Length: 337
Image 1: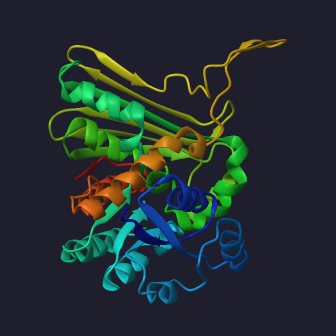
Image 2: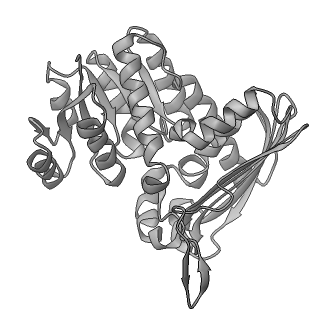
Image 3: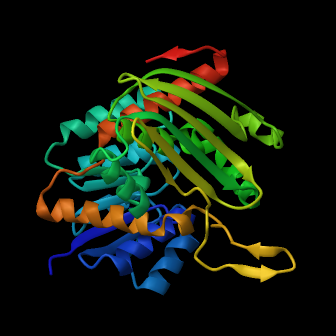
């Protein structure tokens, strides 16, 4: 079997999950190299997973002529630079979102990606590969709920992860670009349209620590798309009950709901608290299948020379909406796109 030889940069919580998927769960991929600025992470990956090459410098990894593709799972501030370096090194590229953390950066790197037409590029909007979202999209495209009128999205992280959220905030791009951007992308995907007007609000209701990074702990936005579809979004970092991702699409002939109750599994616990259904504890658990499916799709697209389903244009348009949310929040005005 032909295997795509890959190297990954970034071995944090999400990076490790991606690395494990490449190494052990995608049969036509091979994890040939790992890279992190933390030497202990590189050594641990090489020792535990038997990875031949380890680096603490991304440019040095790109000099490895055995590599065919780079997987970028580093901090958001590094994405655009590393995408360009990898493409210039002649590699296919999968990058976690976002494309960049400034509007100028995103426009620039989208242009660079488009100039490398001989290389595959894919952006990590993994919810498009979650089985439930894929199923809902098929129902929608088949006209089973008619024309979409209203889309509602919740993305709320558990409060138990707040320390990591605060520490990451400086390099994340903020709540609208880091958290809400997944739902912004989904709303484009579901509505088959682009945003026209944006209004966003929010505050630090519990954790003023975010203020020094010009960020917030909870925020909301409302958008109208060019085709008339309305969408509202809530993103937060203070969920008491667990990781809560929920989407509702109201159409002219019916309604679709995804994840109404963020159940961990089908087990019900009966105890002194009554009948209890546990919730997902984090995004890695909730979207485990989606992360694997998107990687498999990228590898197949490279090996079969197919166009990737999520590219630079999708990243650019979702980021533009995210920046419009930030601008609206800062100015307290409706932003036209």
